[in-house]
Length: 121
Image (cartoon, rainbow, N blue to C red):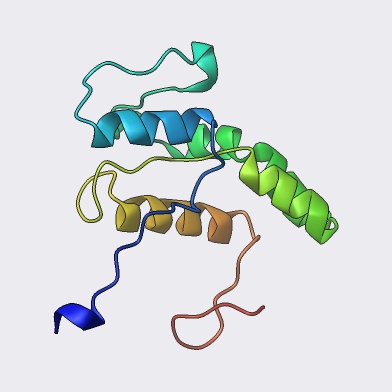
């Protein structure tokens, strides 16, 4: 079975040198202090993660969606915001954050779920 194992060494989630990449690397290395990134990195208490805060953070992306912007403009707006989840499940975990953003997008009329768990496109 050892010959069937693969070790992944590249992370394609973040751009090398981006603030979110530096933060993720610091956390993985066990550093408790945040890397110096000016005001580009903001920490959020779980109770402070409101629809208003998410709407503000993703305003460029939501505007681009509403205007049916080009794919390039949509990707640029989407890439301008990154959320680093402290865990996969639980408060502020990946599933929780995705659900909050999905619900907000549905409230704003930017996302319509068809049948099942997938979206059009």
